[in-house]
Image 1 (cartoon, rainbow, N blue to C red):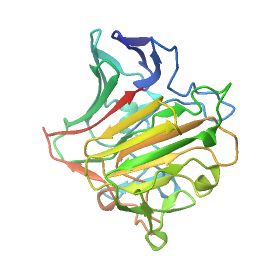
Image 2: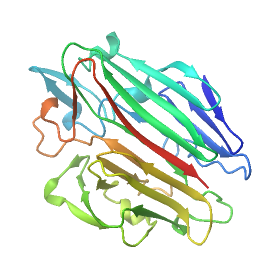
Image 3: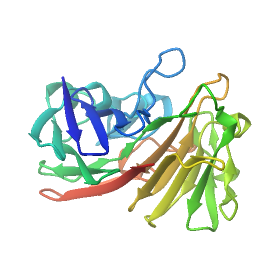
Length: 294
């Protein structure tokens, strides 16, 4: 089942499966902005990542001397969410703990993903994680929206596009060795100059910028043209910019993360995990970003 949000400019489709954003289409131009999950390249569109972002070492972690197994990006993206509310301009979808989640994640939680049309061409997404347990919970959360690049494949190619990051500065860039963060490989990324898309930049997986909660805007657009996407990230710890390197995949993902993969030297204890969030009982964590389509 799907939830539809709509105004005079865009129509938005969200699947109850994973609370995944599946489509954002312009009513004026007919442009479909979201990647349509062609399994030949990557069979998802905009999965929600919870309760981990990225890969755990050996797909496992420990909590209170017990080992748990969890695959990359966690389980939220593969579960059915409840539609708590749905109106023409906003919807709230919810996932709560169950016997199945408790077997791999020993915490009671409530994860709400809230979609809201904030203007004619802007969709906001908010994550609200509530601790309904009697002990602190540990988690990461994040988005993984991927956009059709090029937006007009008949006349454009991937390399015609660029991304631009504000603020303009030298960002710390985390590097992955395999699927894990390696601090010894940390480098920088200069955003004073827009980055032209090139598949060679993704040979070592995503371009991961450390944001440290600083408000950040990323424009993804075609050179000398007026269509694209602007993502405003309110308070994320990191952003990953990613596409397939070894295939001519016609998409680019811009991924705001409140968490990140394990480090190469992680000890496996979830309480020690790099980038983890710790939340006390009865408290709610929120993180948000928005996308403007032009």
